[in-house]
Length: 574
Picture 1: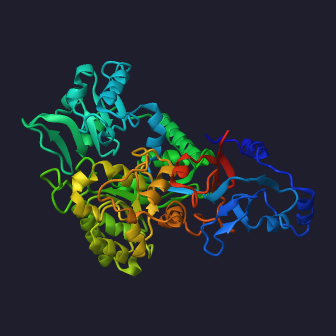
Picture 2: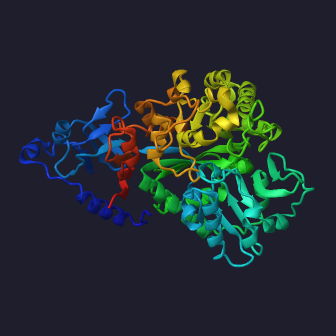
């Protein structure tokens, strides 16, 4: 957590800096410029490899910072001969400096809340998962909600099926339960929760959602998409203090991982107001670029875009939801699932509801970010985007280049890949989804559709950029895993799967862009961040490993040494 006191920030920065300060040798000292002609800088990082993501100077040895901006990028010799004598020098020998990493799709409150509830990410069997829920439920008072997140049947070694109410009813008869699956678009509820919601075999599925049922038509307790909202409304709301702490803790966790910025894909307006408070208090350890949820689009249009003076917090978009996920068989497909007699579902947001929002967004300069995963959802949304672009002339647009986005966008037919690029629509994709889905995508899609699933390299070859993200807390939110997944396209143990198209992995250089300059472009920030250039904001991620040349395995075992945001250390390895 970043302290509020500006005095503390400066003192803390200098104390941490001392761990890395290396006094120049007498020869180096002679080269430091005189105060009359020197470059003023608060600190300089030198004796290292700096990957700038600047085509004019892809690599450097040193970088200097004054205030919150970069004032020098170049060689050790040039640095020492130009900066003033009072510049703090940080010898980073053995480490590697990258432009600050950006997570292009995340949910910061969820990241901060994850340690507060039951996390089921680490359990490798259905049996162990249910046992963990039972142990946790015993601590919950009667009548209170049992809550957690992260179960994922595709990782289990015993049974790979969705959880149901019969797994948990025998130890939760007197307390309702709500536990989203790892994808966040489906959940387990128990009989107590179903009863509180008034759900029985005669209850119809809500539009854009589904109650999974057994052969007798009885709800199993596995609910998808909009059906989840029925139960969320029954859970007592979180206090502002609880939510604020989760946001601050989420940023601190992100900074430790090496993220300097995250793009929050669907932030409730109460959180937007809390973030403004946190920013005003100087308590942000990463930058946040947020989109409001489509359910609060009227508020977004009424308030308009917001950018803090220090560029730490920005709100500029609306997050839309169309279909579900592939793992839950909720993604909307053009043809039936290979392992089910249906095509998934759409209309989490209907076309009739969305059409006026799209047109108003163009006229008011609001970016649209839409959750689409299946090829039917992708095709439909591209058509809706195109119609809005045609209806609102270039002259009417508040922002001529709107940079609308497709979030997740996992299954894209070749013709829609090209249409997306022609329309100037940007894919925001999470490499970890691609390798995690190895365990079930073949069963869901069949070999033929895998040819255009997670087509990272194909999109780049056609001229697209890709905004790389993690979707944490759905995934772990670790930049090492995301970079590895993008370049290896393998499971974390190095194995692959049938029909997985290794040629769709990306180069190391493009993977770095996916988490630096391309996300900056996707947030209209490419002129102020995303690369290490003079005049840009001083955001750096410093790792102990050369990600552009190390083995794939070493990427996963590398460690973040320091995270710097706007010239301030927000994490340093102890």
